[in-house]
Structures are given as C-alpha cells and as structure tokens.
Image 1 (cartoon, rainbow, N blue to C red):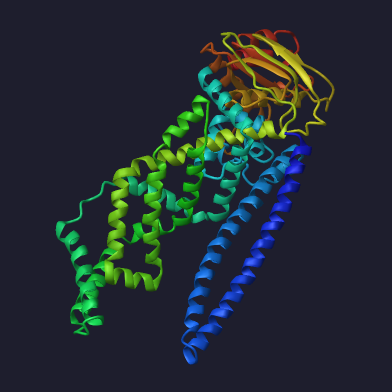
Image 2 (tube, helix red, strand yellow; image 1 turned 90 degrees about the vertical axis):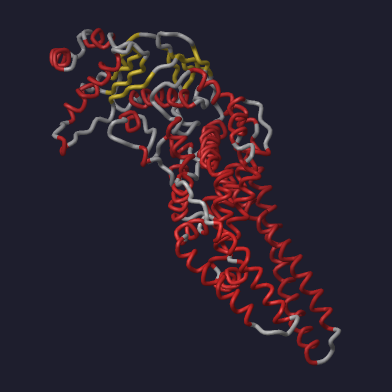
Length: 545
C-alpha cells in the first residue's frame, strides 16, 4: 500500500473524527438543556400548572432519543479513531516505529527452538512483533504456529496463500477487522482471560438436572408474589401474601446464588468481553469470501448469530445480579438468579460445545490478517511459487530483509539447489543479514504470506540454524559444546532424508566462514572437507557424526 494513499485516508479520517466530535459535543449540550427544561417544567407542574407535566413527558422522550443518537455517534467516533490507528500502524511498519508494538511473542520463545532466536522470529524487534495484529490469546497462538520452521504440507501453504491474497484485495474488510480487534483490546481487562478460562471449564462440566420441585417453586413463588402485590395495591387488601411470596423468593434465590456464586461471578465479568466477540463474529459471518480456507472458517461460525444473541441475553440478565436494587427486586419478584443460571445451562446444552470453535475461528482469522500486514507495509513483495521437487530448491530474486527499512535494505538474489554454499567477506559486509534474509523469507513462505522479493519459487524444506549460540551455565554447556549439539541435531534430522535449509554462521567461530547449506545433510562432510576448517575437522567428524 503506497504511503501517499495511506496519508490521504488518514487526512480524511481526521476530518471525519473532528466532525463526529463536534456532533457529540452539540448533543451533549442539547441533553444538558433538556435536563434543565425537564427540571423547570416538573417544578412548575408540581407547584403551579399541572399541564406542564406534558412538557416533562416530551422532554423525557426527546432526551431518550438523543441518548440513543449520542450512543451511535460515540460508537462511530470510537470506530473512526481505531480505524485511523490501524492505518497509522501500517505507516509504523513502513518505518521503525513498529518496534514499539507491545506484542513481541516472547512467550513463544523456548530453548529448544533455536531458529526463533537466530532468525528473530519471536521476541523484541522480531517478525512476530512486526506482523501481529492479534488481540486474543487464540489469535496470538495461531500466528505463532504459522511462523514455524517446519515445512507444512503443500496444500496448507496454498490454502493460506489464497486466503491471504483475498484479504489483501479486500482492504476494507481487513482494516475493519483490525479496528474491531482494537476495540476488543480497549474494552477488555486482564481478568477477562481468567473469565474465559472459567467459561471453558464450565462448558466441560456435565450439569446436574434441577429438581422438579425447585423448577415448580421458581415459577409458583413469583406468581404468588405478583398476585400478592396486585391484591395489596389494587384491591387494597392485606400485604401478607405479598410478603410471604417476596421473602420466600428472595431467600431461596439467595441460597441458590451462594451455590452458583462462582458461575454468576465469572459470567458477569464476560458481558462486555462477549459483546466485542459477538461484533467480530457477526462481521466475519456477514462477509463474502471466495477462497476455500475463508469459506471453511465462515462455515465454522454459521450459527453463531443465533447462539451469541441468546448468550448476550443471558449475560444481560446476569448483569442485573451486580446491581443491589435490581438484585433484590429481581430475586424477590422473579427468582432472577435461578432463572439466569437455568437459561445459561440451557444455552450451554444448545451452543456450549461450539463457542470454543467460534473463538478459535476468530484466532485463525487474526493469523491470516496478521500475514496480510506485510503486503500493506511493503511496496515490493510477492507470493512464492510452491515447487513439487523432492530436492531442496530455492530461488529468490532481488530479495531483502523483511524487518529492515525497504528503501535502505540491500537487495540480493539467491538461487540454490541440493548443495552446499560458502559465503565469505569482510566484517560488517552483511553476511549474517543475508542468511537471516533467506531464513525469514522461508518462514514467511511456510506461513502462506508474501515474501520480500520480486519473484520467488521454493520447494518445501525445514529450516535449521546455528547462528546465535549461547552457553548454559546451569546445565554445564559451553558455547562451543552448544554449537556441537546444534550440529548434532542437524545431522540427526538429515537421516530422515527430508529436504532442509541449514543456515550456519561462523561455525565454531571461524570468522571468515559462513555457510548456507541446502541439503540432505551428507553435504556437510563435503563442505568441511574443502580444507577451510582443518582445525575442527577431526573433532566434528569423530565427536558429532
């Protein structure tokens, strides 16, 4: 996406935001005036002219209309601000400001995945941080899973490429989706993660059936209470029946709410959270897609609208539990807590098994839209052709590093097949960056995203690296030994005869040698036997192999 186009959109959004702020301010003034008129007319009607009650009623109706209109304008204002932030994030990816994005993916780093350290896949200033727009735990996990050093099946890559291509073309959908995710993040709190886990746990627990006597009481006592109220207010008779019904209903509800307290507490915290989830799901469901993967995801949530609408109604009932007045009145008159739990369990039986699927579908959509960001931020990128070759093949024309400024990144072409390659050069000449450029573009290829090149064709191969080798004092492993272990892992993996891209930087710290190996790993012996590593040849061949 060209920078000039983004700047035009930002300018238009800024003007639109200013207009919405002006409208919101005007409505706030009108609402204040209506309140003043209502108070004045109510005072006049109470002490002087009864006809002024009509003006009170009219003011109240107009006030309600303006409250609803104000709510709509505030929603539009929030959406416009978040849409502007989404475009600003693309601008940041074109520069270096993206390094301030808070999601770095450090939680996905582990000592066994050396590629993540070596190629900057996760962590500060990483590929994950550059791409990630995910705001849900499911989305972050799906993106991390997609940026894998192991080659997926060809069909998986092609399906994701097709989906990413469609999302790139449907810019409005992708931008709005990110905007909705930002709204979700803005409204959510840390406690929501715990609430969501409690929901998952509750969905997995088999419910006990409520006793018939309790169900009968839950309807009989409210009827008795309402009848007693009618008798007391309209017929001007004794309040005994109302008192008995109200007291029994409230006390029974109190006992039940203590029994279901944990469920009521966790569900009430999810009200706003699930509202944002519903908005995202509805948006995805209403979209029109052509690619098979996106259609599959849409099919997974085909009945979410009805299910989430019912769940929202249940959550609205549970919310009344948190207000003292509505709690007392609702439980005293209608046994509100009991019926809220009853409806919650009914919803669980009908839709509970599907909600985890719905939320994971959002996560997969977050992963795909994250992969789209590279194409929006870079002016030069292309989808790789997936080759069926059983031998490792890699062809990248005018490639550059995905995490460097595009206008400053040095472009190089790289063509390799089943062979070994030695890269030499002076210090700070870009040898290591060149290796990482190849590796990161291969990771993007695995994910189904575009790569930073003018043209590209690759076969499927796993990526192995030995670049940033660190010691482990607690395990008694020196840097040298850690490097030997990495080479050993490569040798073991080569026995499967699967195609591999192996990137080794300054093997055993011989400074002039950096090796790119695209192998079935028999090539390593040949490479070492070239005579460049005489000092370590005997040790490697006898200790590692």
